[in-house]
Image 1 (cartoon, rainbow, N blue to C red):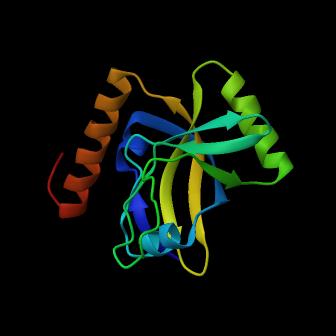
Image 2 (cartoon, rainbow, N blue to C red):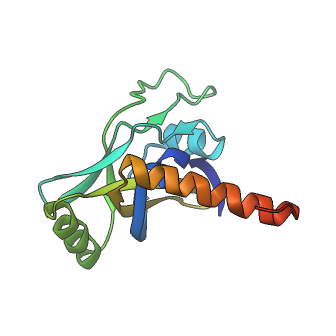
Length: 145
């Protein structure tokens, strides 16, 4: 499966504890638009509506070749997960400091989304992550630290 949209900011802002791959309920033009790479995960998040997990604020642009089909780019989209995964996600949301965030959107025969349980990083942790990344880059280039 090809990654068509990623949420790079999520990996910086959150420490990823556990990830899941889920399907999504989409309309035909939305699926075709996703395969073209016309989706964005910026600002998207996962919440629960009753017993179901819902992806909110994910932007899928209109498919340019669709006939006059009404299209809502930011509508809520239901996630397809099994009961054990739903229970684990719901339990993590009840813990303080944990949240469920989308990481990447994959397209192939089916459209899948990788979601993760994440713990928010503090500013000092973000600085430490940047410092470690720079050290690794310098070592890779063969320079001294």
